[in-house]
Structures are given as C-alpha cells and as structure tokens.
Image (tube, rainbow, N blue to C red; front, side, top):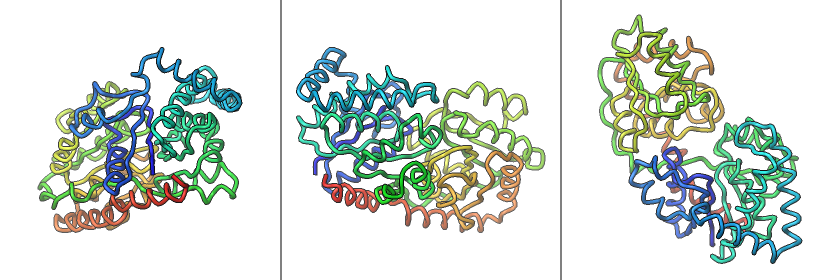
Length: 406
C-alpha cells in the first residue's frame, strides 16, 4: 500500500491529530508520504510538529518555476484529462465565487489545478496509488483535480464546521462523488454529508473518529481544590464562542468568589476577548496564556477542575478528548459530534449560544462534591479511551484504504 496524505498547511499547532493519525498508520506498516502546500513553521512550538515539518514535502517551497514547469509538463502528456480537469476546476470556481472566505473563485481554482498537476506527477514518481486529503476544503479540491488529471484515486476526511457552512461553494457533492470513500469524524458529520449526495453514495461515507494515544495520558493528577478552576482551549475565532464564555463568567462570578478561567490559545479575536474581560472587570479571574505545546496544554488541564467548551460550531474537538483522557469532567455546548462523546457521567452539555446555561453549569460544577468530580473524571477517561484510541482507529482507516484498493 503506497499512500500519501495531503493537507493545505501542515504541520500546524491545531493539527496534531493529523500527525498522530499518520504515525499510527506507520506503526502498523502503512507508510505515508506527507504533502502540504505550505508550512506553519514559524508558529510551531511542539517538538513533534517541528520534527514532522522535516518529513513533509511542501509544494509551494519547490519554487514557482519548478512548480509550473512540472505541472505544465504533466498536462502536456495528458491533454484529454487536462481538458476534463480544467472544465471541472472552472465549474468548481464558479460555485466558489462569492462564497465564504477560502472557497475561492475561478482564478484560485486554476491555481489549484497547477498544484494538482504537480501532485499527480509526484504521486506517479513515488508510486503512490492513493491520496488522502484532510478537510473537505482546498486540499480535497486539489485531490479531486489530481484524480481528474489521471492522478491517484483519493479520499478525504471532513471535520466541519467549515465544510457544513458552505457545501455548495466547496463543491462538496462533486468531491464525495469523485472520491473512493469519505471519512466523517462523527455520526453527525456523516449525516451532514449524506444531505448533499444521493443515497447511492451513502455507503462510501465512513465514520472514523479522530484519536488520542492513551499511553500519553498516565493516571491524572488530583483535581485542585477550591475554585471552580476552568480551562478553555482553542483558536480565538468566532466559532469558538469565547466571547459568550466571558459573559457566562461575568454572570457566575458574583456568587463564586474563587472562580477562575485559563484561556489557552490565540487568534484574530484576541483584542475583542481582552476588551470583554476588561468590560466585565474579570482581569484577576481570567488568564490568557497564548498558544501552548502539548505539555503546556496538559499543565493547564492539570490545574483545572474541568474543561469548558462554549463553541457555536465544531466538528468534534480534540481538546475535548484530551481533557477527558486527562480525567477532567467537561462542560460543553451540545453541538455537532459533542453529544456523541460527552454523556451525563462525564460532564454537562448545554444549549449553544446561551450564556446563562453555561453559567448554570459552572454553578452545578461548583456544588459537586469533590469525590463525585473524581468519579466523573474517571468516567470521562474510560469513555474517551473506548471510543478514540488512535491505534484502533488507524486499523479501521487502514482497512478502508485496503478496501478501496490502495
């Protein structure tokens, strides 16, 4: 089995789950060649991501002349398929024009066509028969166009919520129909993909969760006393709902004098979030740490009694799995795949967009006897290990590759 993975930007601090998946495949003798359009090298802090960067072929670092020359050379050898791919790129670009940022228009899709021709050529040179893209966005577009250019068969993993926000602009139906199979990371995600294709296509949509490595989560440290002490982890972006979390903290704070929150992450809304913290006078209660490596995230989880996830839109976030593996109960909004993992034994799920509901769950946490919180942490840990062991999931994924003839 000769397999390649394709990601737009890789490695990346928020994409360590892809690295774990690749390495788990390689542990069961499924070698993976890494393709990415670009690196996030300057932002990497984790040693594992830095090492992965050296293993990855970054297409745009080949140089413009080599990239275009290789692509045009491949197209000249395959004129008929080039016409098919050009027509497809033009059609996908028309659907993407005017869509949300990142869906692109025709010019961008012509760039994807050049990238796809390069990938098709490299896959032939390396003897790669199957290309797997992560995310149903531009990486899946490149994989689809590479296939149209007589490149390898392809599959892709859809995470959400971006794909679910713009299925038409992203040509999601065309990608599913062109793929050997498609992976959704939750049953909810699968349901959203089924919406856009005929029932005859549904069998090719598989559910394979993202995974964690249980061995990396030894017995958790004791829950801290006092508090409640909460931690939230993620990009400071609109879909994560951190502004609502600040509002919930303001509601809960007057009756909980020791309430504390650590926010791990960064992003475009940092200024807005800091402004809300100042507006509600929560500076002494909320700590912003910036991005942290895996050890830093683990330390933040160790110092908290629970993870809180206020998201408006998600797939099934890795930090939720990591917190549960670390023996921490969770408070999370009941969206997407979250309720498939978080049950009442492991934490609280609340309606999305409801600051009062978040504040009520924080109060419920504060009233929970310490021994009951420990029990919830154990239940969370057991549940996530049963459902998200990366080695078991990699075996399932490998079987899908084999069934597709990879």
